[in-house]
Amino acid sequence: MLLGVALLPVAAEAQTPERGSGTPGPVTWGVCDDPRLLQIGAECGFVRVPLDYARPGGDTIELAVSRVRHSSSEQDYQGVMLTNPGGPGGSGLIMPVLGRFVPGGVGANYDWIGFDPRGVGSSRPALTCDVDYTGYNRPDYVPSTPQIEKAWLSKVKEYAEACDKAGGPLLDHMKTTDTVADMDSIRRALGAKKINFYGFSYGTYLGQVYATVHPERVGRMVLDGNVDPGAVWYDANLDQNVAFDKTIRFFFDWVAEHDDVYRLGTTGKAVRDRYYAELRTLKATPADGKIGPAELSDIVLSAAYHVVYWPDVAAAFSAWVNGGDAGGLLDMYAPPGTPDADNGYAVYLAVSCTDTSWPRDWRTWQQDAWRIHTRHPFAAWGNTWFNAPCRDWGARPGTPVRVDGTRTPPILLINETYDAATPFAGALEVRKRFPGSVLVEGVGGTTHAGSLEGIACVDDTIADYLRDGTLPRRVGGNRSDRQCEPVPVPEAAAERTTDAAGITRADLRQLTGR
Image 1 (cartoon, rainbow, N blue to C red):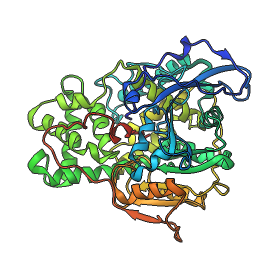
Image 2: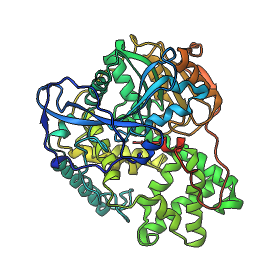
Image 3: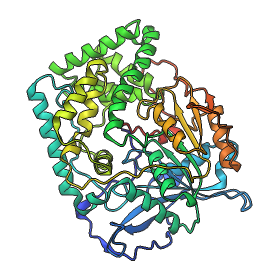
Image 4: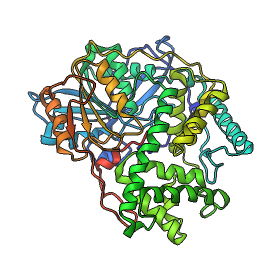
């Protein structure tokens, strides 16, 4: 996953908790440390909340928050817009920049609020378990020998144990319900009777649960890349394993269409075969001694999240296959030793592993992974090992909230048809549970959480809704209510490209996947 960059996290065990009253005080806004936040005119502060909401007078933690205030007249002011980029584990402090991408200046009518959820980024304490866990030249994801399987089982168990040691008491209070309670604490600290909310990916699940628990406190809500609330979380990952294999084929087909640029095959099947052949080659001899099959799998996986990465992934893979140049692959793989990157993964697990119980019997995971791998091999085993620390997680699991939007005001849902991280069936399930909702579909698209990226049909719908609550008409049946163009694929490029300088929508592409 790709997370936003905030301040480097501090190890959870190094923090000394304070006692609190359970009632958050008003935010003392000050100067932000992140230059990107300074660039967009944000101000920053902290909200002190209970570590355990069942003991509101006990130990406390601090949530880092950011704000870009409305620039509209007070007559047009629409209140606060709380945001979340997804994850779990995504830093949200940069999210107030989102307001500038809403067409027609409608974003100026809101105070845009970003926050680092508990355990994340600049919030205190922040969870970091093992900064060298990802590393280079890890074992192949596919356990084709007992030795590979044993190596991964040992590796994921050691990571879970490292998190148990580093997390301390925080680890038992990292559930979605804890963050939802934090969201309401932020609301109270801001002095708002209601909150508006814009959530991507896992952020859509936060919105669903908040709306279920506090329907009377919901204003407007935009949920993009919708989590299936009925599949949290083991089944959701099984669904992803199938969806990623189907979605990556669109990328392979595109590469084949541009064989004059990439020289990797003239059919999608040929490109796909070349990819799997290269995995076998790298298993014996990693590129530059660092990029083995697991690392290449992670790099190519980004193309299944967002079409913007297609040219860069294709160019890097082509340079290696056709010229032996591993530079592009190395640039696209996050090196080990970075606490912020480990923080994102650690929090992902801390939430996912405790929101609900996971199978403890390894045979269940093994049989499901091999069953899906047989027909859909692209991500089945990689995703299995990504989540496998949940088998050995030390914190107590909870019971997911049954999401029910029958008392929630009308909300706006957005999903592309072939979004692999949050498959379209999940968006239909959310639409069913929120009878006042309207679903906008990016027809035929493969991008995950790509709203406000310049597609007028989608973005204008968002602007209309945020301006005065106007939504498209809800149609009958189990389908989307408005159909729009998907995020377009960039032009093919032989060299890797970079985004323009400054704060762009690219800063908000939070690749969450798992």
